[in-house]
Image (cartoon, rainbow, N blue to C red; front, top):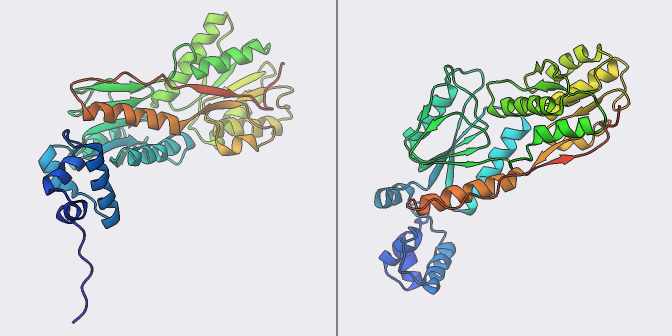
Length: 339
């Protein structure tokens, strides 16, 4: 007769090894009070030794919680959304939550609502909106679990809406625009991202408002699709205008495409035209000239957001203090100079 596989350790095994009752094991894994730190440590050590993991379905039935958070992300390989999703997964593991991810594809006019519905059916304790795009009609998004938004987001109706945003007064697009004007450029041209993206819309608005506040001419913005190819095509148009001396692209890939087009047209970067991107992708430091851009610590953003959300889920009677507003930072390299 073939030997059967080894039985998976259960709560009774943990209780026996730790010298406690099975009820105490349940209390530890459900974060209930009235358990001493010494007992908690002993139970967790026994669980690690046995490779014990509590049954998620049974835990949900007992506590009414799934210890799972849904994330609405974009089905894209672009650096910003994909790196944030990886950072969220790491942060969730550190606070003993799992993630369920549903993608909201940009070409799908009702993708955001469909992604949220998909997550709610799976059973999640909360939903994170990461890099959201608008649905057709821009209707209020109704969600019946708590919601955390990372950055700008559509109007959401939910029991609780938490938000982690960029620091007031230090908005990155405004800082880029002020920096280029400070170098002596009379105005700054902008290549925006797709306007269904809230992040792209916010960057364009702050670029526009900063030029107006400075009394500078506001050129008509051009709109790309985040790819280097779209930056290249729009860069070819801008390269034909000798009055263009500064360009802010809404992401690094488009900025790299712009630099390619400028070089091809015989326009020196930064001698004739300064170019700034956004995201500080790994290759930005290694193109020529190296790209001035805006960096954002997605690990820090994910950690702060997850901790903020799970602190609330663990004590829903009290909304915890919001974390410090997330800071972007200018990374000055060789693609910018005085005109």
